[in-house]
Amino acid sequence: MATDAATVEQWLDRMADEIRASVGDDVHDLLIVGVHTGGVRVAEALHTRLGARDPLGTLDISFYRDDFTRIGLHPRVRRSELPFSIEDRTILLVDDVLYSGRTIRAALNELFDYGRPARVLLAVLVERAGHELPIRADFAGTRLELAPGQQVRLNHDDLGLSLRDARTGDPIDG
Amino acid sequence: MVEAGADVQLGPDGRLRHFLTAEGLGRDRLTEILDLAESFAGVHDKSIKKVPLLRGHTVVNLFFETSTRTRSTFELAAKRLSADVLNLNVQTSATAKGESLLDTLANLQAMQCDLFVMRHAESGAAHFVARHVAPGTHVINAGDGQHAHPTQALLDALTIRRHKGGFEDLTVAIVGDLLHSRVARSEIHALRALGTREIRVVGPRTLLPNAIETLGVSVFHDIEPGIADADVVIMLRLQRERMEHALLPSETEFFSRWGLTPERLAHARPDAIVMHPGPINRGVEIDSRVADGPQSVILDQVTNGIAIRMAVMALVAGTAPREARP
Image (cartoon, rainbow over all chains, first blue to last red; front, side, top):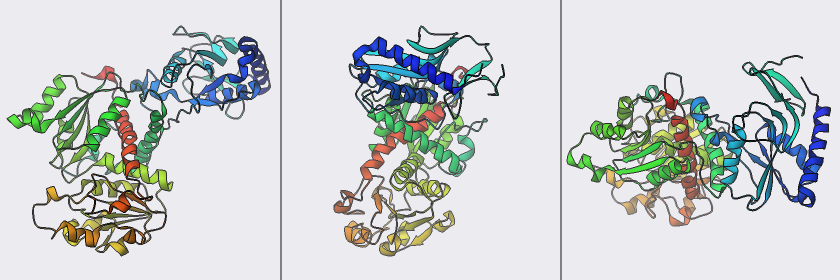
Protein backbone atom coordinates (compact mmCIF):
# COMPACT_ATOMS: atom_id res chain seq x y z
CA MET A 1 0.00 0.00 0.00
CA ALA A 2 2.66 2.56 -0.86
CA THR A 3 1.12 6.02 -0.85
CA ASP A 4 2.77 8.73 -2.91
CA ALA A 5 3.62 12.15 -1.54
CA ALA A 6 0.97 13.90 -3.65
CA THR A 7 -1.77 11.83 -1.99
CA VAL A 8 -0.37 12.50 1.48
CA GLU A 9 -0.27 16.24 0.69
CA GLN A 10 -4.00 16.01 -0.11
CA TRP A 11 -4.63 14.28 3.22
CA LEU A 12 -2.75 17.10 4.92
CA ASP A 13 -4.91 19.71 3.12
CA ARG A 14 -8.01 17.91 4.32
CA MET A 15 -6.67 17.55 7.86
CA ALA A 16 -5.87 21.26 7.94
CA ASP A 17 -9.47 22.01 6.90
CA GLU A 18 -10.80 19.72 9.64
CA ILE A 19 -8.53 21.33 12.24
CA ARG A 20 -9.69 24.83 11.18
CA ALA A 21 -13.31 23.73 11.34
CA SER A 22 -12.78 22.22 14.77
CA VAL A 23 -10.69 24.97 16.38
CA GLY A 24 -12.36 27.93 14.64
CA ASP A 25 -10.95 31.46 14.93
CA ASP A 26 -8.20 30.40 17.35
CA VAL A 27 -6.42 28.27 14.75
CA HIS A 28 -3.49 30.70 14.46
CA ASP A 29 -2.95 30.41 18.20
CA LEU A 30 -2.47 26.64 18.09
CA LEU A 31 0.90 25.49 19.40
CA ILE A 32 2.03 22.78 17.01
CA VAL A 33 4.37 20.16 18.44
CA GLY A 34 5.87 17.33 16.40
CA VAL A 35 7.23 14.09 17.85
CA HIS A 36 10.72 13.16 16.55
CA THR A 37 11.44 12.21 13.89
CA GLY A 38 8.58 11.54 11.47
CA GLY A 39 6.11 13.60 13.46
CA VAL A 40 8.25 16.71 13.12
CA ARG A 41 8.08 16.57 9.33
CA VAL A 42 4.33 16.13 9.38
CA ALA A 43 4.03 18.92 11.95
CA GLU A 44 6.05 21.26 9.69
CA ALA A 45 3.58 20.60 6.87
CA LEU A 46 0.59 21.37 9.12
CA HIS A 47 2.35 24.40 10.63
CA THR A 48 2.66 25.95 7.17
CA ARG A 49 -0.90 25.10 6.18
CA LEU A 50 -2.44 26.46 9.37
CA GLY A 51 -0.34 29.64 9.46
CA ALA A 52 0.46 29.15 13.14
CA ARG A 53 1.86 32.25 14.83
CA ASP A 54 4.26 30.50 17.20
CA PRO A 55 7.31 28.54 16.05
CA LEU A 56 7.11 24.77 15.74
CA GLY A 57 7.82 22.74 18.88
CA THR A 58 9.53 19.36 18.85
CA LEU A 59 9.63 16.51 21.34
CA ASP A 60 12.08 13.64 21.57
CA ILE A 61 10.36 11.19 23.86
CA SER A 62 13.29 8.75 24.27
CA PHE A 63 13.65 9.59 27.96
CA TYR A 64 9.96 8.88 28.53
CA ARG A 65 9.68 5.52 26.81
CA ASP A 66 8.40 2.65 28.92
CA ASP A 67 10.70 0.14 27.21
CA PHE A 68 14.05 1.86 27.65
CA THR A 69 15.41 -0.65 30.15
CA ARG A 70 14.63 -3.37 27.62
CA ILE A 71 16.00 -1.80 24.46
CA GLY A 72 18.65 0.49 25.97
CA LEU A 73 19.05 4.14 25.30
CA HIS A 74 19.73 5.53 21.87
CA PRO A 75 22.66 7.87 22.30
CA ARG A 76 21.50 10.36 19.68
CA VAL A 77 18.55 11.69 21.56
CA ARG A 78 17.56 15.08 20.21
CA ARG A 79 16.78 17.91 22.52
CA SER A 80 13.12 18.65 22.92
CA GLU A 81 12.49 22.25 21.89
CA LEU A 82 9.36 24.00 23.06
CA PRO A 83 10.22 27.66 22.41
CA PHE A 84 7.06 28.96 24.09
CA SER A 85 5.11 28.57 27.30
CA ILE A 86 2.44 25.88 26.95
CA GLU A 87 0.53 27.12 30.01
CA ASP A 88 -3.23 27.32 29.22
CA ARG A 89 -2.64 27.00 25.48
CA THR A 90 -4.17 24.57 22.99
CA ILE A 91 -1.59 22.15 21.65
CA LEU A 92 -1.77 20.22 18.41
CA LEU A 93 0.44 17.19 18.95
CA VAL A 94 1.54 15.62 15.66
CA ASP A 95 3.02 12.23 14.84
CA ASP A 96 3.34 10.24 11.64
CA VAL A 97 1.81 6.95 12.80
CA LEU A 98 -0.40 6.16 15.82
CA TYR A 99 -0.31 2.45 16.60
CA SER A 100 0.02 1.16 20.19
CA GLY A 101 -0.35 4.67 21.63
CA ARG A 102 2.78 4.33 23.78
CA THR A 103 4.68 7.07 21.97
CA ILE A 104 1.81 9.50 22.48
CA ARG A 105 1.53 8.46 26.14
CA ALA A 106 5.22 9.31 26.53
CA ALA A 107 4.80 12.58 24.60
CA LEU A 108 1.91 13.64 26.84
CA ASN A 109 3.98 12.89 29.93
CA GLU A 110 6.86 14.97 28.62
CA LEU A 111 4.53 17.79 27.57
CA PHE A 112 3.09 18.05 31.05
CA ASP A 113 6.58 18.44 32.48
CA TYR A 114 6.67 21.76 30.63
CA GLY A 115 3.41 23.07 32.07
CA ARG A 116 -0.34 22.66 32.00
CA PRO A 117 -1.89 23.11 28.57
CA ALA A 118 -5.58 23.97 28.29
CA ARG A 119 -6.16 21.22 25.72
CA VAL A 120 -4.15 18.76 23.65
CA LEU A 121 -5.35 17.60 20.22
CA LEU A 122 -3.71 14.76 18.31
CA ALA A 123 -3.13 14.69 14.56
CA VAL A 124 -1.47 11.75 12.77
CA LEU A 125 -1.01 10.80 9.14
CA VAL A 126 -1.87 7.17 9.79
CA GLU A 127 -4.00 5.77 12.60
CA ARG A 128 -3.30 2.07 12.62
CA ALA A 129 -5.58 -0.42 14.39
CA GLY A 130 -4.01 -2.13 17.42
CA HIS A 131 -4.12 0.48 20.17
CA GLU A 132 -2.85 -0.71 23.53
CA LEU A 133 -3.90 2.44 25.37
CA PRO A 134 -7.06 4.56 25.36
CA ILE A 135 -5.55 7.12 22.98
CA ARG A 136 -7.25 8.10 19.68
CA ALA A 137 -6.35 10.61 17.02
CA ASP A 138 -8.56 13.69 16.66
CA PHE A 139 -7.41 14.14 13.06
CA ALA A 140 -6.03 11.38 10.83
CA GLY A 141 -4.97 11.26 7.19
CA THR A 142 -6.06 7.66 6.94
CA ARG A 143 -7.05 4.78 9.19
CA LEU A 144 -5.90 1.26 8.39
CA GLU A 145 -5.32 -2.25 9.61
CA LEU A 146 -2.05 -4.12 8.96
CA ALA A 147 -0.67 -7.59 9.60
CA PRO A 148 1.41 -7.79 12.82
CA GLY A 149 4.82 -8.08 11.09
CA GLN A 150 4.19 -5.01 8.96
CA GLN A 151 5.04 -1.40 9.53
CA VAL A 152 4.08 1.79 7.75
CA ARG A 153 6.85 4.34 7.46
CA LEU A 154 7.35 7.84 6.15
CA ASN A 155 9.67 8.03 3.11
CA HIS A 156 13.10 9.46 3.68
CA ASP A 157 12.86 12.17 1.03
CA ASP A 158 9.20 13.15 0.89
CA LEU A 159 5.96 12.72 2.83
CA GLY A 160 5.01 9.56 0.90
CA LEU A 161 4.42 6.37 2.89
CA SER A 162 5.62 2.82 2.35
CA LEU A 163 4.83 -0.53 3.86
CA ARG A 164 7.78 -2.35 5.38
CA ASP A 165 8.73 -5.54 7.15
CA ALA A 166 8.84 -4.47 10.81
CA ARG A 167 11.84 -6.67 11.59
CA THR A 168 14.13 -6.11 8.60
CA GLY A 169 12.83 -2.73 7.43
CA ASP A 170 12.62 -4.07 3.85
CA PRO A 171 9.82 -2.66 1.69
CA ILE A 172 6.79 -4.86 1.08
CA ASP A 173 5.19 -4.55 -2.35
CA GLY A 174 1.48 -4.56 -2.95
CA MET B 1 44.49 -3.86 39.86
CA VAL B 2 44.55 -0.10 39.61
CA GLU B 3 44.88 0.06 35.85
CA ALA B 4 42.53 -2.83 35.09
CA GLY B 5 39.29 -0.91 34.90
CA ALA B 6 38.38 -1.18 31.25
CA ASP B 7 37.57 -4.90 31.35
CA VAL B 8 35.43 -4.67 34.49
CA GLN B 9 33.29 -1.79 33.33
CA LEU B 10 31.93 -3.45 30.19
CA GLY B 11 29.31 -6.18 30.37
CA PRO B 12 29.49 -9.37 28.28
CA ASP B 13 27.36 -7.64 25.61
CA GLY B 14 29.94 -4.84 25.31
CA ARG B 15 27.68 -2.26 26.93
CA LEU B 16 28.80 -0.02 29.74
CA ARG B 17 27.87 -1.71 33.02
CA HIS B 18 30.04 0.30 35.40
CA PHE B 19 31.80 3.59 34.85
CA LEU B 20 35.19 3.39 36.50
CA THR B 21 37.75 5.03 34.24
CA ALA B 22 37.94 7.00 31.01
CA GLU B 23 40.87 4.83 30.03
CA GLY B 24 40.24 2.36 27.23
CA LEU B 25 36.76 3.71 26.43
CA GLY B 26 37.68 4.98 22.97
CA ARG B 27 36.51 7.95 21.01
CA ASP B 28 33.13 6.55 19.92
CA ARG B 29 31.96 5.67 23.38
CA LEU B 30 33.18 8.94 24.88
CA THR B 31 31.44 10.86 22.10
CA GLU B 32 28.28 8.86 22.76
CA ILE B 33 28.33 9.97 26.40
CA LEU B 34 28.94 13.61 25.43
CA ASP B 35 26.06 13.50 22.92
CA LEU B 36 23.73 11.97 25.45
CA ALA B 37 24.72 14.62 28.02
CA GLU B 38 23.97 17.28 25.43
CA SER B 39 20.42 16.01 25.09
CA PHE B 40 20.00 15.94 28.88
CA ALA B 41 20.99 19.59 29.04
CA GLY B 42 17.49 20.35 27.69
CA VAL B 43 15.95 18.97 30.88
CA HIS B 44 17.00 22.17 32.67
CA ASP B 45 14.63 24.15 30.42
CA LYS B 46 11.51 22.42 31.63
CA SER B 47 9.35 23.65 34.46
CA ILE B 48 9.60 20.15 35.92
CA LYS B 49 13.32 19.41 35.69
CA LYS B 50 12.92 15.66 35.52
CA VAL B 51 12.75 12.76 33.12
CA PRO B 52 11.43 9.39 34.27
CA LEU B 53 14.35 7.25 33.06
CA LEU B 54 15.48 5.90 36.41
CA ARG B 55 12.13 5.92 38.16
CA GLY B 56 12.16 3.12 40.70
CA HIS B 57 15.96 2.93 40.83
CA THR B 58 17.80 3.65 44.04
CA VAL B 59 21.10 5.48 43.76
CA VAL B 60 23.47 5.47 46.72
CA ASN B 61 26.05 8.22 47.03
CA LEU B 62 28.74 6.37 48.92
CA PHE B 63 31.34 8.98 49.80
CA PHE B 64 34.28 7.87 51.91
CA GLU B 65 35.90 11.26 51.26
CA THR B 66 34.27 14.64 51.56
CA SER B 67 32.91 16.35 48.50
CA THR B 68 30.42 19.11 47.91
CA ARG B 69 30.27 19.70 44.17
CA THR B 70 30.61 16.13 42.97
CA ARG B 71 28.24 14.68 45.53
CA SER B 72 25.58 17.33 45.04
CA THR B 73 25.71 17.22 41.24
CA PHE B 74 25.45 13.41 41.34
CA GLU B 75 22.48 13.80 43.64
CA LEU B 76 20.80 16.36 41.38
CA ALA B 77 21.53 14.24 38.31
CA ALA B 78 19.96 11.17 39.93
CA LYS B 79 16.93 13.17 41.02
CA ARG B 80 16.49 14.66 37.55
CA LEU B 81 16.40 11.09 36.26
CA SER B 82 13.65 10.42 38.86
CA ALA B 83 15.76 7.98 40.90
CA ASP B 84 15.56 7.77 44.67
CA VAL B 85 18.78 8.90 46.29
CA LEU B 86 20.45 7.82 49.48
CA ASN B 87 23.41 9.91 50.64
CA LEU B 88 25.80 8.12 52.92
CA ASN B 89 28.50 10.04 54.61
CA VAL B 90 30.54 6.98 55.42
CA GLN B 91 33.09 8.75 57.57
CA THR B 92 30.45 9.12 60.23
CA SER B 93 28.75 5.76 59.78
CA ALA B 94 29.36 2.09 60.44
CA THR B 95 32.82 2.01 58.82
CA ALA B 96 33.89 4.30 61.62
CA LYS B 97 32.80 1.45 63.88
CA GLY B 98 35.02 -0.99 61.99
CA GLU B 99 32.68 -2.38 59.32
CA SER B 100 34.56 -3.46 56.18
CA LEU B 101 33.85 -2.02 52.74
CA LEU B 102 32.35 -5.31 51.54
CA ASP B 103 30.08 -5.55 54.58
CA THR B 104 28.84 -2.01 54.00
CA LEU B 105 28.18 -2.95 50.39
CA ALA B 106 26.42 -6.21 51.23
CA ASN B 107 24.08 -4.33 53.54
CA LEU B 108 23.25 -1.74 50.91
CA GLN B 109 22.57 -4.45 48.34
CA ALA B 110 20.28 -6.14 50.84
CA MET B 111 18.33 -2.87 50.80
CA GLN B 112 17.85 -3.29 47.01
CA CYS B 113 20.01 -0.38 45.96
CA ASP B 114 20.82 -0.46 42.24
CA LEU B 115 23.54 2.07 41.59
CA PHE B 116 26.51 3.02 43.71
CA VAL B 117 28.28 6.31 43.16
CA MET B 118 31.49 5.94 45.06
CA ARG B 119 34.35 8.13 46.18
CA HIS B 120 37.20 6.66 48.17
CA ALA B 121 40.72 7.71 49.18
CA GLU B 122 42.18 4.40 47.95
CA SER B 123 43.07 4.10 44.28
CA GLY B 124 41.17 1.16 42.78
CA ALA B 125 38.39 1.14 45.41
CA ALA B 126 35.57 1.52 42.84
CA HIS B 127 37.02 -1.32 40.76
CA PHE B 128 37.15 -3.52 43.82
CA VAL B 129 33.50 -2.83 44.57
CA ALA B 130 32.51 -3.33 40.91
CA ARG B 131 34.03 -6.81 41.01
CA HIS B 132 31.96 -7.75 44.03
CA VAL B 133 28.51 -6.32 43.37
CA ALA B 134 25.61 -8.52 42.30
CA PRO B 135 24.60 -8.66 38.63
CA GLY B 136 22.20 -5.82 37.79
CA THR B 137 23.98 -3.49 40.19
CA HIS B 138 26.16 -0.68 38.87
CA VAL B 139 29.13 1.27 40.16
CA ILE B 140 30.21 4.75 39.11
CA ASN B 141 33.61 6.03 40.18
CA ALA B 142 33.31 9.52 41.65
CA GLY B 143 37.03 9.66 42.38
CA ASP B 144 39.38 7.00 43.74
CA GLY B 145 42.60 8.11 45.41
CA GLN B 146 45.01 9.54 42.88
CA HIS B 147 43.79 7.23 40.16
CA ALA B 148 40.72 8.46 38.32
CA HIS B 149 37.78 10.86 38.34
CA PRO B 150 36.24 10.02 34.99
CA THR B 151 32.98 12.00 35.20
CA GLN B 152 35.01 15.16 35.91
CA ALA B 153 37.14 14.44 32.83
CA LEU B 154 34.00 14.05 30.73
CA LEU B 155 32.32 17.18 32.01
CA ASP B 156 35.51 19.04 31.17
CA ALA B 157 35.46 17.51 27.70
CA LEU B 158 31.81 18.56 27.30
CA THR B 159 32.67 22.10 28.42
CA ILE B 160 35.54 22.24 25.91
CA ARG B 161 33.39 20.87 23.09
CA ARG B 162 30.61 23.35 23.82
CA HIS B 163 33.01 26.30 23.71
CA LYS B 164 35.41 25.14 21.02
CA GLY B 165 33.29 22.85 18.85
CA GLY B 166 35.75 19.94 18.84
CA PHE B 167 39.16 18.70 19.90
CA GLU B 168 41.29 18.14 16.78
CA ASP B 169 42.64 21.69 16.50
CA LEU B 170 43.14 22.36 20.19
CA THR B 171 46.11 22.85 22.46
CA VAL B 172 45.12 22.10 26.04
CA ALA B 173 47.41 22.99 28.96
CA ILE B 174 46.87 21.30 32.31
CA VAL B 175 48.63 23.35 34.98
CA GLY B 176 49.63 22.79 38.59
CA ASP B 177 49.61 19.85 40.96
CA LEU B 178 49.39 16.87 38.62
CA LEU B 179 51.02 14.53 41.08
CA HIS B 180 47.96 14.35 43.34
CA SER B 181 45.37 14.90 40.66
CA ARG B 182 43.08 12.06 39.63
CA VAL B 183 41.27 14.64 37.51
CA ALA B 184 44.36 15.29 35.37
CA ARG B 185 44.99 11.61 34.77
CA SER B 186 41.39 10.96 33.61
CA GLU B 187 41.46 14.13 31.59
CA ILE B 188 44.59 13.14 29.69
CA HIS B 189 43.07 9.77 28.78
CA ALA B 190 39.77 11.32 27.67
CA LEU B 191 41.25 14.25 25.75
CA ARG B 192 43.71 11.99 23.96
CA ALA B 193 41.00 9.52 22.98
CA LEU B 194 38.88 12.40 21.69
CA GLY B 195 41.69 13.46 19.36
CA THR B 196 43.06 16.60 21.04
CA ARG B 197 45.98 17.92 18.98
CA GLU B 198 48.30 18.77 21.83
CA ILE B 199 48.07 18.15 25.55
CA ARG B 200 50.60 19.90 27.76
CA VAL B 201 51.24 19.33 31.41
CA VAL B 202 52.70 22.31 33.19
CA GLY B 203 54.02 22.26 36.75
CA PRO B 204 56.99 22.16 39.08
CA ARG B 205 59.07 18.98 38.92
CA THR B 206 58.01 17.98 42.42
CA LEU B 207 54.31 18.04 41.43
CA LEU B 208 54.53 16.13 38.14
CA PRO B 209 54.35 12.32 38.22
CA ASN B 210 57.40 10.42 36.95
CA ALA B 211 57.28 9.38 33.31
CA ILE B 212 54.08 11.36 32.69
CA GLU B 213 55.27 11.95 29.09
CA THR B 214 54.50 8.27 28.40
CA LEU B 215 50.81 9.32 28.42
CA GLY B 216 51.47 11.26 25.22
CA VAL B 217 51.73 14.75 26.69
CA SER B 218 54.42 17.42 26.41
CA VAL B 219 55.95 18.57 29.68
CA PHE B 220 56.67 22.18 30.69
CA HIS B 221 58.24 23.45 33.89
CA ASP B 222 57.39 27.12 33.41
CA ILE B 223 53.89 28.47 33.11
CA GLU B 224 54.40 31.15 30.42
CA PRO B 225 55.75 28.85 27.68
CA GLY B 226 53.44 26.11 29.01
CA ILE B 227 50.27 28.05 28.26
CA ALA B 228 51.60 29.98 25.24
CA ASP B 229 48.97 29.94 22.47
CA ALA B 230 46.85 27.41 24.34
CA ASP B 231 43.13 27.22 23.52
CA VAL B 232 42.23 25.76 26.89
CA VAL B 233 43.96 26.28 30.25
CA ILE B 234 42.94 23.83 32.96
CA MET B 235 44.15 24.89 36.39
CA LEU B 236 44.34 22.21 39.06
CA ARG B 237 43.80 22.65 42.75
CA LEU B 238 46.87 22.56 44.92
CA GLN B 239 46.06 19.52 47.06
CA ARG B 240 47.76 20.44 50.32
CA GLU B 241 45.81 17.77 52.19
CA ARG B 242 47.37 14.99 50.11
CA MET B 243 50.94 16.23 50.44
CA GLU B 244 52.87 14.08 52.84
CA HIS B 245 56.26 15.70 52.31
CA ALA B 246 57.48 19.22 51.85
CA LEU B 247 56.92 19.39 48.11
CA LEU B 248 56.45 23.11 48.17
CA PRO B 249 57.97 25.99 50.04
CA SER B 250 54.73 27.99 50.49
CA GLU B 251 51.44 28.85 48.85
CA THR B 252 52.63 32.39 48.30
CA GLU B 253 55.65 31.21 46.41
CA PHE B 254 53.51 28.79 44.43
CA PHE B 255 51.25 31.64 43.37
CA SER B 256 54.17 33.85 42.42
CA ARG B 257 55.57 31.17 40.09
CA TRP B 258 52.50 29.16 39.04
CA GLY B 259 49.38 31.16 39.82
CA LEU B 260 47.25 32.08 36.80
CA THR B 261 47.10 35.88 36.67
CA PRO B 262 45.60 38.00 33.87
CA GLU B 263 49.16 38.89 32.80
CA ARG B 264 50.11 35.24 32.43
CA LEU B 265 46.83 34.32 30.76
CA ALA B 266 47.69 36.87 28.05
CA HIS B 267 50.25 34.31 26.78
CA ALA B 268 47.42 31.95 25.83
CA ARG B 269 45.23 32.58 22.80
CA PRO B 270 42.94 35.60 23.24
CA ASP B 271 39.89 33.33 23.00
CA ALA B 272 41.32 30.75 25.40
CA ILE B 273 38.97 29.40 28.07
CA VAL B 274 40.05 28.84 31.67
CA MET B 275 38.81 25.83 33.58
CA HIS B 276 39.21 24.52 37.12
CA PRO B 277 37.66 21.40 38.65
CA GLY B 278 37.04 23.20 41.94
CA PRO B 279 37.17 23.96 44.71
CA ILE B 280 39.36 26.87 43.72
CA ASN B 281 42.06 28.24 46.00
CA ARG B 282 41.94 31.93 45.18
CA GLY B 283 45.38 33.47 45.29
CA VAL B 284 47.09 30.05 45.30
CA GLU B 285 46.71 28.53 41.84
CA ILE B 286 44.40 31.13 40.34
CA ASP B 287 43.91 34.88 40.65
CA SER B 288 40.35 36.02 41.38
CA ARG B 289 40.49 38.33 38.38
CA VAL B 290 40.91 35.23 36.19
CA ALA B 291 38.54 32.96 38.11
CA ASP B 292 35.76 35.56 37.82
CA GLY B 293 36.89 36.95 34.47
CA PRO B 294 35.33 36.69 31.01
CA GLN B 295 37.48 33.72 29.94
CA SER B 296 36.53 31.61 32.95
CA VAL B 297 34.07 28.78 32.29
CA ILE B 298 34.37 27.34 35.79
CA LEU B 299 30.65 27.61 36.55
CA ASP B 300 29.74 26.14 33.15
CA GLN B 301 31.73 23.11 34.24
CA VAL B 302 29.47 22.71 37.27
CA THR B 303 26.32 22.94 35.15
CA ASN B 304 27.71 20.50 32.59
CA GLY B 305 28.57 18.13 35.44
CA ILE B 306 24.88 17.47 36.03
CA ALA B 307 24.25 16.57 32.37
CA ILE B 308 27.33 14.31 32.20
CA ARG B 309 26.36 12.51 35.40
CA MET B 310 22.82 12.02 34.12
CA ALA B 311 24.22 10.54 30.91
CA VAL B 312 26.57 8.15 32.69
CA MET B 313 23.91 6.98 35.15
CA ALA B 314 21.34 6.50 32.38
CA LEU B 315 23.83 4.54 30.28
CA VAL B 316 25.00 2.15 32.99
CA ALA B 317 21.61 1.60 34.59
CA GLY B 318 19.98 1.22 31.20
CA THR B 319 22.23 -1.64 30.19
CA ALA B 320 20.78 -4.36 32.41
CA PRO B 321 17.24 -5.52 31.80
CA ARG B 322 15.43 -5.01 35.09
CA GLU B 323 13.57 -8.32 34.80
CA ALA B 324 16.93 -10.13 34.71
CA ARG B 325 17.87 -8.89 38.14
CA PRO B 326 18.15 -11.33 40.98
